[in-house]
Amino acid sequence: MIPEGMTSAEWPSVAGKIVEAFQKGMLLPLFKKQIARMGIVADNIYGNTVQEFYDTTIGVQFIKNILNFKPKTKDNPQGNDDFAGYIIGSTFGLNNRIKEALATLKKGKELNEASDVSTTKGIIAEEGSNEVKEKPKYRNLTDAGVVPGEVIDAVKAKLKTVLRTLKSRMDAAISNNRTVTPLMAEIQFEMGKQADIDLKTAMGGKKDGKFRKFLLKTKKATLQNMTTTWLMGKDGQGGIPQAIQKKLKETGEWVSYPAWVGKEIAREKTSTDNAGRTSGALLVRRHPSIVNYKNVDAVIDDDTYLAQFLNETGNPIRGRKEALAKAMAEEISFEIFTSE
Image (cartoon, rainbow, N blue to C red; front, side, top):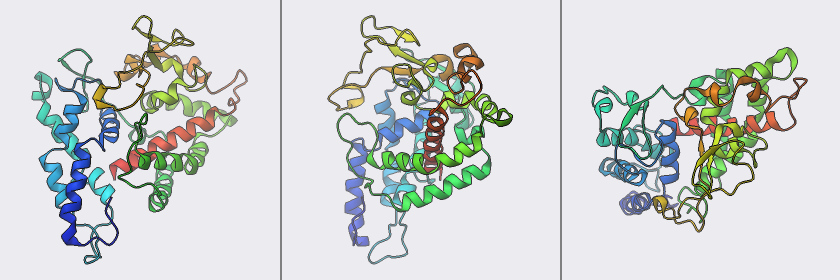
């Protein structure tokens, strides 16, 4: 994104092109993932669409911060060489601008009474309604303490190595029918390979029921944080499909597992959020009771949940523990990357 050999005098012109790319939606996939971590769902955020929320976030202050960035250049070798970290996780970056945009878009009694941005994490805009309701606090995998601190430290160390050797450019375009930038896809792929061993070790095995205890302890965090793609598995096999609802093409109704198995699923319109894809994504969502962080046990009880990973004798089902470790490694790495 920042050309090699660039001088400080050339930075304003380069920064202008970066701002233009951001305004055209380069950061939209990352933005959507970030607001989902904050508990913001559906295409109605205090009466605004996701696209409008994004446009508000990529506003005047964010543009000023980009222009004020002091990059490492040919004539300023002491400058900042971590532009990605600056625009995403720093106090000048995307995360704080999202919080500011929430305050700008605030509507309703609950948000008016909020004294700080932390309160907005418990607010969700419901689809098809302008009402804003408060909900229990969401916690990501790191905050939920699914693994000990030393495991998080090990993942951080590996992430630093991966970030130094990335092949994808930050400004690489997203191809049609993709929703994740090449950069983020590379980080997740590499960390899924390198950090999964740390997660598998923390999970334990059959001995002393350690893996079983881990599964029960982290059940809620897993259902709340794993991607819908991972949760639904393949046509109901693998993952935790009980956590997923799909919209049937024939009836237009959202149905829970196993009612959607083998059925034709509706797709989003390619115009949604100016997606630009040649085929819309399948309409899939986390079960509302999980999204609302309550009644999780009503969606999937402990025995059913454990059966997704353990057989009748208590032994791990082949490949299931490994798949969970890889998915958690990717998610925790993403959390670390966007918070530091």
